[in-house]
Length: 491
Image (cartoon, rainbow, N blue to C red; front, top):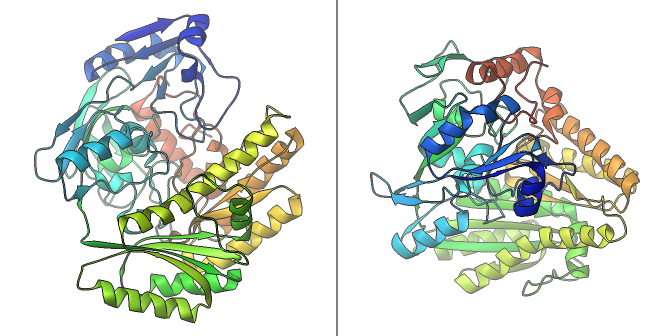
C-alpha cells in the first residue's frame, strides 16, 4: 500500500488528491493511502486513521465535492484498477479504480457484441465512483443508472469488516427491514407517493429493494466498495442518432412527448435551449458541428432497431419531425455520422467550461454552478419556464440542457465574479425547491456530496431523514467514513 503522511508531503507529492471537478476550495489532508486490495483497505480503515474520519476518493470526476478531504486522511482506489472475466457470459468483475474508458476498451477488444450501458460524460470516471454515486448519463432513458448493472459487490465496512453481497441474497421486506450478519437489522422508511423516475438524492429507499441497491449510490458514507460484479448488455443490431433543430422551444416540447410515445427503443432523449445553441456558435469545439442559424432549440435522441426495422424507423421519425415543425435535422445511421452528433452533444459542457475559464482569469474564485434536479416529465415545460424566469431575473449567464426524456434538465450558471457566485448558489437552491414542488428530486444523477447535502431537507421530512441517519449510524457508529458529507446524519 502506498502511503503519504503529513499535510505538506501530501500537498507536495499528491496535490491532485485535494480537489475534484467541483473545484471546492480549502481542502486539506494529513495523510493519503492507496491500498491495492480489500485486505489492505480493511487494515487501513480499521487503524488509527478511522478516528480522524476517512474521505474516500476515486477518479475525482464528481462535481459535488464528495471526494474532497476536510483535514483528515483520504483513501484512494487508484491502485485497484484490475479487471477479470465474470462467472457467466456478458459479465465482468472490476476493481473500483478501473476507469470507464479502460472498461470500454477491454469490452471492445475482447467481448465483441457486448457493451456497458452507463454512460456519464466523463470517461475517466472510475467504476467505483460510478457505483458510489449511481452515475447515469444520456442512455439512462433506456438503460437506467449504474445500480441496474451491478449484480454484486465486495465492500469494506467501517471497522474493517469485509462483506460480499450478491443481488437477491438480502432483500428489504414489506416492513422495510433487511438483516445481514455483518451489519445487523437495517430499517428504512419508504417515501410516500410514486417513485421518481430518476433519483440520486440520499439513500435509495424502495419497497422490496436489494441490499446491493442501498450500497450503490451511498457516496462512501456506508462503505468502501472494493469489487464490483458488472452485467453487460448485447449491442443492438442498429442504432440511429438524430439531432432536430426547432425554431422555437414550443416545438421541442411537442416533439419530446411524441418521441416518448412512439413505441420504439429510445436510448436517449435530450434537449438544448436557445442559449445553449448560441454558446456553441460562439465557442465551437474542434471537430464538432455548429448548430444551424436561426434554431432556437434542439432535441437529440438515439433509437435502437434491427436492420429490418430501420427503414420503418426512419419514416416514422420523419413524420414526427414534420408534425413538430422541425427546422432542420442531422441524422446519423453510420458510425461517422453518429460520432458527429455525439461530438455536438458533448461540446456543450466544453463550451461552458471554456466560458467559465475566461471569467476565472480575472476572478480565480469563479466556478461553474449546476443544478441536477428532475421532475415528472409531464411537468417539464412548466418547470423549464419557471427555472428560466428565475435565471433571467438574476442577470447571470446560463444555459439549460439535459435529459428531457426523464424530466431532468441541468441549469449551468457561469458567474463572472464573487457576487455572481453567491447569487448563483442561491438560484441553485431555488431551482431545487422548484423541482420538489413539482414532485421531483433535488439530484437525479450527480449525488449530493458536500455541496448539495443541505438540499436533501428540501424533499424529505423528519421521518425519512431520521431513517437515513439510522442506517448510517448502524453501519458507521463512530463516523469513520466520509465525515465531511453530512447527509445521512441526524438533522
